[in-house]
Image (cartoon, rainbow, N blue to C red; front, side, top):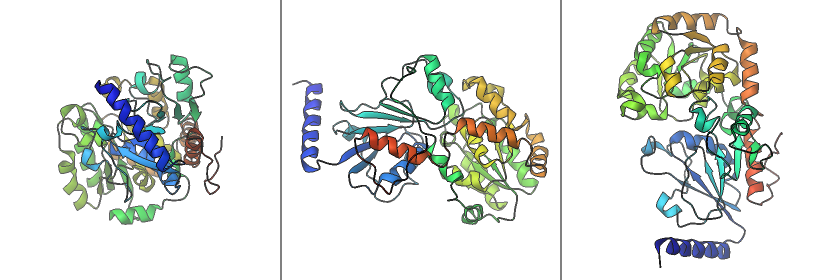
Length: 388
C-alpha cells in the first residue's frame, strides 16, 4: 500500500473514530506561523472556546518567526499539536492568516484571516496574481481589498467565499476594553508623560535599519517615554529580516534607563492605545492606529516601498494622514508639531480608517458568525450578533 493510501486510511479512520466518539463536535485547526498570527485569530478563539461543540487545535511549522514565542501570549490550556500530527487528523475547518497552504486531509474547509492592511507584497496579499478560489472563506477586512481580489481575477465577483468581516484583533481599540493608564502602569511608564511609539516594519531596508537607533536616541534625549515595538521578523538575526542587528540588545538598556519600554508582546494594540504619537515607515500598525484618531509620523524609505512591493494606493493613503520625514534629525520637530496640534489631519485619518476597517468593534462577532455558519452550527445566543 502506497504512502498516500496509508495516509488516507489513517485519516478516514480518525474521522470515523472522532465522529463516533464526539458526534456533535467540530474540530478547528489554527495554523500559526508567527506570534502575530495567533494575535489575529485569538479574538475568535476566545469567543468560541467555551462552546463544547467546537474544539480548537493549534499548530505551527519549523522555522516560524519567533518560533519559541509563537504562543507566548496564549491562554493556558491551548491545544497545540505538531504539523506532522495534523496531517493525520480530520478537521472541519482550518484558519490561516498567511497565504501558506498547509497539507491537510480532504474536506477541511480553509478560512483566510488576513493579518494586515498595509498593501505590502501586493501581488500576494492585495491584488494577487494567483487564484484564491481554493479558500472556502476569505474574511476580508475591508471592501477595498475585496474589490482588488475581484479586479485582479483572483476571485469571481459573485464568490460565496468572500465575506466582509473586518479585523477582529483591532476591536479592542474602539470597544472600551483598554485603559491607557492601566497599559502604561503595567509597562512601568508614568501615565503623565508624553508617550511615543516607534513601530517599524521588518526588512533590511526598513527605517529601523536605516536610522532606527539614531531616531530612538533623539526621542529619549528629548525627554519622551519611548516604546519600541519590533516586528516579529525584526527579531530574526538574518540580514534580510533585521539587517543582522540584535535590536533587543541594542534598545533594551536605553529604554529601560529612560523610563521607556521595549515591547516584546506580539499584540500591538495595547501599545497603540497607550501612545500619544505613532512613528512608523510602512506597516499595518500605521493604519490600525488611525482608529484612535491620533497623530502619525511617517518615515519615507523609498527602498523599503520598492522592496516590499507596496501598492502605491496605500503609500498615498498613509502619506495623506501623516507628517512625513526622511531623516532622524527631523523626528523631534515632527513629534513636537504633532503633539501641539493633534487634530491636524483628523478628518483624513477618520476617512481612511473608515475605508480600511469594516465595522470596527464588531469584527469578532462577524467572524464568529461566519465560522459557525461554515461549521454548520447555530451560534449560541450569548454570542453577539454581527453588523453587516
